[in-house]
Length: 173
Image 1 (cartoon, rainbow, N blue to C red):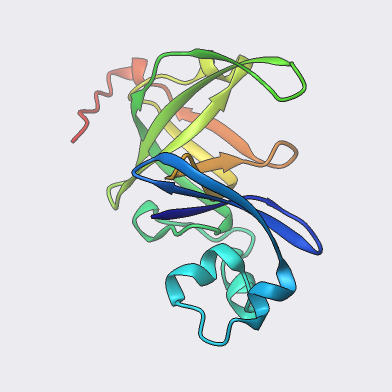
Image 2 (image 1 turned 90 degrees about the horizontal axis):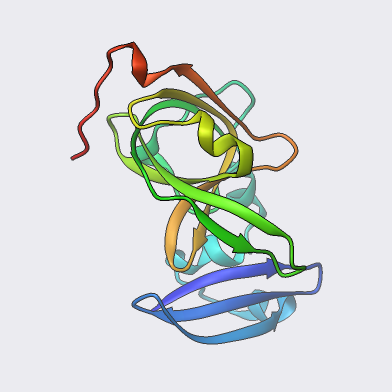
C-alpha cells in the first residue's frame, strides 16, 4: 500500500491510499489525529511531517548540491547537475480549472541514481536527451505513487548547461 499526501492544510490534510498504483481511497484527516499516534512508524513520518526537526532537515541550505541517489520524499530546495537520459512523449493535460497544458517527463541521472522530472509547456522544447542540465530549487514529491521531482513555479529553475548536440551521447541503463 502506498500513501500519498494530496493537499496539506493548517487543520487537516488529504491523503490518497493506493495499491500497485491503483487508487483505493482518499481521506481527509485532522492533523491533531495524526499527532495523537504514539508510535508512528518511521516510513510514515515523511508523509505526515509530525516532527518539526525532520521537516527542517529535509530543506537543503542555499547553494548546497544534492545527489539523486540520496533524494527522499518531501525534500525541497534541491539543486544539482544531471544528464537527461530519457524524454517521454509530450501529452496534453487539463487542470482542474480547465486550463490546457503540455507536459512531458524527463529522466535525470547524475551517476548516483535516476529520477523523473515533469517539464511543462514552452520549456519542453528546450530539453533533449543527452543534455547536461542544472536544476535549482526542486522538491521530491509523489505523483500516482511514484517519486518524482517538481520545480517550484516561482523559484524553480531548469537550465541546459551543455546541449546534447555538441557530440555528447547518453545511453540509459
